[in-house]
Length: 483
Image (cartoon, rainbow, N blue to C red):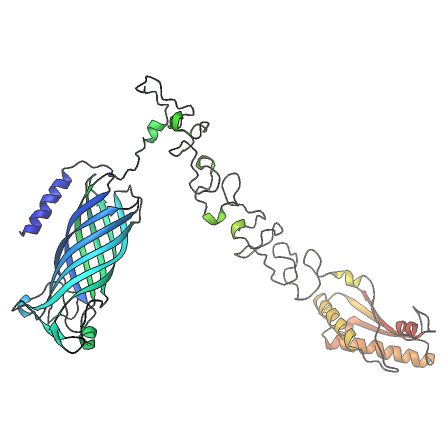
């Protein structure tokens, strides 16, 4: 058994014989050992070899640590290895030996509760890698070409950057056991080799280690009494023989209690005031939703839960349409769905498959009020003509769409003229004009058997024939609807 193994064995024995409890430390000092390798180049394949070292840390805050690490690496290449990620090496066949002293300064963050016995860390930093590559048979430094084509030692004091992640276990107030993996990138700063050497050499060092750390110093975190002790009024006497009063029984003496009227049973902070963990303005003892997200703050009800004013299932802080009619179906953003595009949202639409563009009533169904009275078409006819003008053709298109959807409605088309011309001629002209409207509706899909046509001629005047405007009103088509 090597000396290093003896040291680890002794430390482990010291650890397991010490009682377990929470720790409150400011500094830590440890020793470590592990494995490391190099990769990323074409010059040589180094396998995983032992390394050892130590570390020292300073606790900046409850979760942040400043860590200094010193590691000694020794790696031999393996001419038969197909990958850097192999273990062990036949040193008798090695052609290169990597010797490095690694000096690292990094910031680490505790990812879990600092009081947890088990914790995870993540850190980033950098430092100096003081290294050289030797001939393992002669223990002399190999020679390579420098930036100016001069011959120089294959060595450097090089800047590297690193990222690491670890897992630690508190064994007792003064000792912890940790494991860590790290990746170092050699930046080239401080290495003045030729471009051929730089491109061929390994620039990544990978490592994993196990460390025993000794914790010492006091960080100054105030220890709180247990919940059991908080549930009763403290009746201990002070040096002045006066009772420490706790009027509201929250475990915080009146002398330092900022909230003297806390309701009994409420969870309070060190100042004796009710705790509001999620910051929504509702204390934890009254909060039915104690994990409200930060975006919802200011938009919760008296029970601490996000408000949904329109009851559409999307809370107001996420709702882009917070004032919907109750009962409307909405999308993920809280805005109404309107499948048929009639302006009445799904869920409130009694006719959810109305043809697009049709006028509907408040319930989303086609507005049949159009059939309650005759439709009058004041067509701008040229003298003697029976063609429908463009404006009225659009009105007939809209009518045909509705008639094709409501197929139990029948219609009578009546044509009228003014009193210019003979009575017989006007009657024939009015019938032609009525038939032309019918033919146009048939082209648009309305069945011919649903339509009756009549030429009324110069009858049922609605204006005076003494003026051009009056005669224009008399020249008309009336469509009467019936079942």
